[in-house]
Length: 343
Ligand SMILES: CC(C)(COP(=O)(O)OP(=O)(O)OC[C@H]1O[C@@H](n2cnc3c(N)ncnc32)[C@H](O)[C@@H]1OP(=O)(O)O)[C@@H](O)C(=O)NCCC(=O)NCCS
Image 1: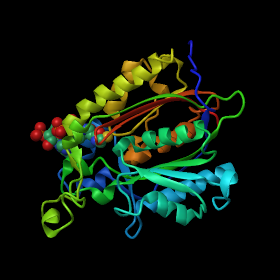
Image 2: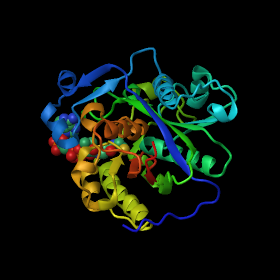
Image 3: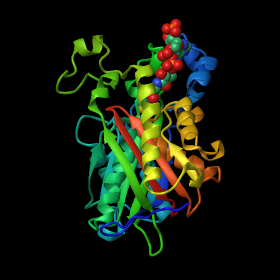
């Protein structure tokens, strides 16, 4: 390996803590068999999913974010209500299932965790929401503007899922996670490089049309099921397989590394077959590819932090490891990031 660590303007950023949360209620494939024409064997073979977590009625995605944020800050020994350098300065939330159109989920989280004096915003990038939010946070730290940025990726997809549509309802679950970004210490590397891309021509294949300014909520939008996720599964699948491989290869090649040099690959969990196709292209040892889709389904912006926790639990993510993250999502959006794990 000849890792090229290119110089950056300012200082390097690293992940200094992680916290995740999934709601306790679970829907299994067997449960779905009772409500739509599907079966455990089809879902496992085509997607790798066995069960997914579901947020209880009366809660919103901000509640998932708050649980994850508190665990993350606790892991670093930080009180959210401390101001400035000792507390959280900025909160960035990747989500496409906010509690409401506005205020932003970042504002709701800021209030609920008591992060006085912080600023923040939401990032709408579908399943790439966490990797896009992460890069925004990394740049804030690298520039020297901020020393503590809380980046959260979370979604409550089951709220937008049509449980009469077997082609989508088997896929999605609720959950998410938070990481704290801080300046790297002397000798640490943290974030190395990223490749992010958007392709709006793919918006027709994966969207939620109702409730926005074009089609405000009405009896008609509800009758037409425009408040549910619409997906052309095969079109999304083809794009995801091609672009996950393209973005990950690009970020590895231009930094002088190959899949064999990685401690682990932490991909977005949309479909097990998309993950293994990408990992094969990278020549990765399957043992070092993190897959937890069986337990959680697709939690959109939540999948990567949830998979980071799985990687740690499985002993596959340790300080100093070179790590590749990658996601593809509604938009279309594509994101890949290369970093050294510094926790
Ligand atoms: C959705 C997805 C799992 C479908 O798998 P697929 O292998 O492409 O399956 P197809 O859509 O071609 O459907 C094959 C057959 O299975 C059927 N089918 C679809 N869903 C089913 C289900 N839950 N149970 C049983 N049969 C099902 C279809 O009706 C079709 O039947 P037909 O051949 O009689 O018409 C797959 O396309 C996918 O994962 N797409 C990407 C999803 C994604 O990543 N979304 C989030 C964005 S990050």
